[in-house]
Length: 378
Image (cartoon, rainbow, N blue to C red; front, side, top):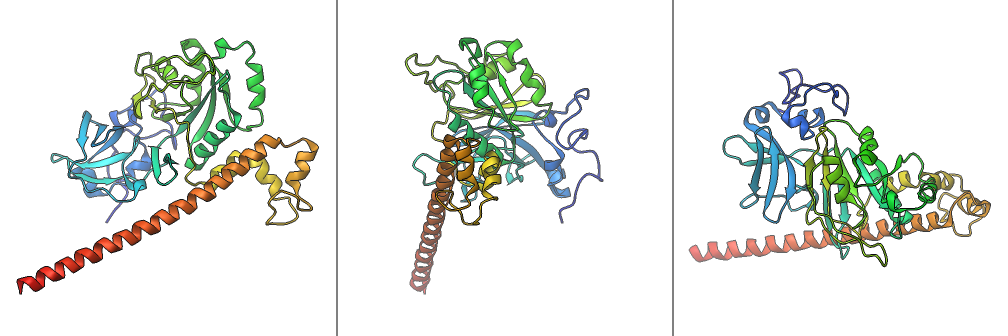
């Protein structure tokens, strides 16, 4: 029977000074430096504590995982490992795995504190992005590629995953007036914002106040906004390749080839990921509600509960548009994301039904084959 380990003996680390953060003055254990917290510790049974080793997934390749634990970094082959059919139950970057000590056998995947996922290109399957992320740096650039609707999409994704969100505006050194961009994001309430030069250590130093030791930070943003440059500056090393942008439209070039976690000198871990221009929302209505809380508050004031905010009498959303207190672009983007989630959820439900039917067909075929074989043996 599974029991909590808190009362048995000290965990792999040396405790925690708060629900999510480690005391800055205390030396981190190897696992704490990888993001190990009581949330994960409490999931282990006594048997697993004795026989298994927790390892964090640092990078995912086609047939293997790069993992790290108390004894350092390892490469774990997925060959021969029976993984669940459901995509959400398979390992992704940031996950914690339990492997048997000595044999290295795969035991199980620990419950996640957060999970980022998207609809894969083609909108037929869910694709995992990262797990167990504490904070997200939504990265946008102060140039032609700045897109407020895209920032709102990233914010909805972050809110749905349950992570904290921060906005970093890069290329401030190349912009004559950053105030215009800061003014444009004022409508994103409760979202801390900082404009930086991603190549200058002193400029990005203020970001460190947003997260503490033992936390995992991810970056979301399109190609060319400076995510890899930001990673290199924060780490003080050339961890990720960088490339320039196209001068004609400020669009970026892909430089990151796969998602990976990088330990930072101050005890954090930073996730670098390929630029994602097509970030389809796989679900998470709560993320939309949180990212567009002003529209949600207005909708609750409408006369009719099923108001679609078009031409219904007593619509508080339309009234706000007429008064100028609600931006029409923001409402259009809200509608777009709500329709997208609804469409993708229908697609996923249909795909799951097809998978169940196909699985049933395979089982029936295998059953008939076994029956024929048994009759042949007789």
